[in-house]
Length: 323
Image 1 (tube, rainbow, N blue to C red):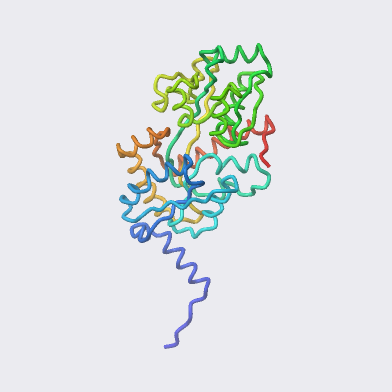
Image 2: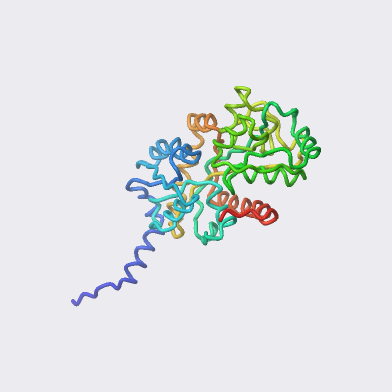
C-alpha cells in the first residue's frame, strides 16, 4: 500500500486539535512551567516567588520564576506573547501590562487582544501619607490646606504611569487641588524625599509606606481602597475621610499567550485558586502588603477592561504620557 506523507498544514491542524482536547488538559503539565515576572526584587516578583512553590506542588511540576526587567515592563509582556501557547510560559504581572499601551505611543500591543487571562492573583492599594510636620490629620484637612495654598505643597511623584503617580493624579483631580509633582526615580526614592521633608505628600503602595508610618517618620491619612483593608489595620479610607468615591487599587493576574488551550487555562486556574486559598500563602502575601484575590479567567479579563477604561479617562484628561 502506498503511504502518503502528511502535509505541514495537516500536522499543525492535528497538533492544535490535540492541544485543545480535554485529554491534553488531563496530561498537563508534564514539564517545568516558566512564570515570567518583571524585575527581581519588586512587588510582582515577591508575589510570584511566594506562590510558585505551592503552585508547583499542586500541579505536580516545578514552577520557576523568570525575571524579564527593562522596557518599562514591555519586555516581560513581549516574551510571553511570543512564546508557544502550550501553558508552559505564563506572565505574572500587574498594571504596567495594561497601562503601558495607554501612556506610551511606542507600545503597540493590545492587552485584551494579545494576552489570554488565566486568573487573578492579588490586590494592593495605596496609602495617602504626609510628612509629620504638615498640620493635617485627615484627608479633608489635606484638601483644605492644599486649596488654601495652591501650588505650594509638593507631591513625591514616582515613575510616570506607576500606581503611585496615577493614584496621586486621580486624587488631585477629584479633590480639585493644585499640588506640584516632583518626579523621583522610583517609589523608594520618592519616600526618601518625603521622609527627609523635601516634599510633603505621596500616595505609594501600602507595603512601601507602612513601615515608615509605624516608626512615626510619616503620617497616614487614608487608604485608597473602597473599604478598610487588613493591609493597613486601623487606617480609614480616603473616601470616608474627605474625598467620597475615591478608589485606587492595583491588581495582579496571570496571563498566557493567545491560543493556549482552554483545558490548560482551566487546570492552571484551579491550581492557582487553591494555592491562593492556603492559609500560609494568604498570611505571607498579607504580610508583604498584598491581598490574595482568587478568581476565574473571566474575572481577570473583566478586571483588565475595567481598569483600562477607568485609568484611560484619567490619562486622557490629564495628558499623561511616558514616551
